[in-house]
Amino acid sequence: MEHQLINAIEAALGWNGPGELGKGFARGRMGDVGLAARILTPNRLLDVAMRRSLNRPQFRCFQKGEEVHPAIYYTDVVSPRGQSIPTVNMRSLGRLLEEGATLILDQLNVFDPTMEVACRALQWWSHERVQVNAYLTTNDASGFPLHWDDHDVVIVQLAGEKEWEVRGTSRAAPLYRDADPNTTPSEEIVWSGVMRTGDIMHIPRGHWHRATRVGTGSGKSLHVTFGITQRTGASWLAWMADWCREQEIFRRDLDRSPGASSEALREAAVQLIGERSPADFLAVYEQQTTLPRHVPYLDILGPLEAAVCTTRFRPEIKENGDTVDVLASGKKLTFASKALPALRLLLSGRPVPLDQAAATVGAEVAEVAEILVKEEMCATLTPELSSGYTGLVTNAVS
Image (cartoon, rainbow, N blue to C red; front, side, top):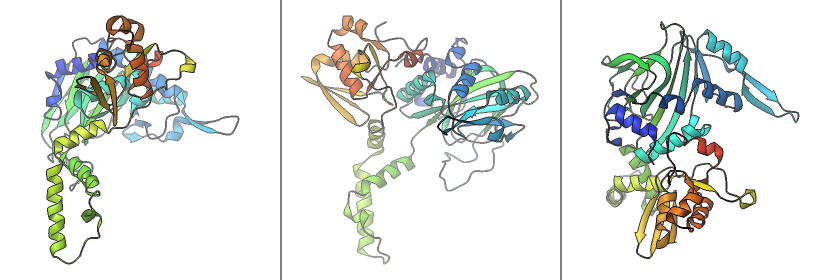
């Protein structure tokens, strides 16, 4: 899927594909600054907060370096049936923002179609899981103190400006679960300066960083952070531990006395490692990922007019002479080879209006689309989902 945000990231950072992800700090600027407002605006973020029942601490607010107690800006609305629904008190939130505060909404991709599509495009591009958090800071307010993340991040400044400091690592390749707490910041300053609308920055895992508007005066800053969690050798070994349960020797109780049983266990472990390589793990990870949420297709609600592939990772298409296999999300579907043009179109990750597609690849595209939607590899392109592609991803038959 060709997404304008990915094109902007690659151009700004001087990348050609995801190969540089996690390799080193990088910073640049998108060529078309107008793209920033298409991705997200402060008012759109506040609209999400207003219309959703957001769980705490997924949505939280900070002021003067400390987290604001949720009771100050949350209200529990009680329905006539006595159901309590937590909602953001927008009047109270507005006062906080006017005084100067930072609000954070984690996993915005769960609520916003544009962010959902952007994260899916980044997952297809990077072959890794991606989520996005949004940060709105107003007036003279601070952000998080100096810290490091256990995943690579791509930061896109969408409105206003914010001052940043990025430092080097104090532990190579730190993990969330690690043998060292990694609590002493590095003294090496890699970059410090101001991120302005349209700027893009990549901070690899483990690099210490902080951002603030303290001393900046009136104004605002909106940025989104795409968290990209790459798999590690520890991930591979954890996957291997699940496979070991197939063999009886690993399910037995450990013998406390040294001897033949310990040697046999070591030999079985060596054999297991030889049978399942890191490359096998990387391939299986993408194919076994669970299916995302989407609006189900029900013919009683009307005909299928448009569809789009919504698998977390790009589906694999295998040609086998007279048949074609499609593998994605732990499923394998087999089609006649004549369906290949329709499959390539429908699994491109781009919206597919079926009437236009029929003129391009044949009338069978409607039948293939219905199968893929029912098998949850594609989704009905509702107006809401379509809005996430508008201006960012062209449709497949344009």
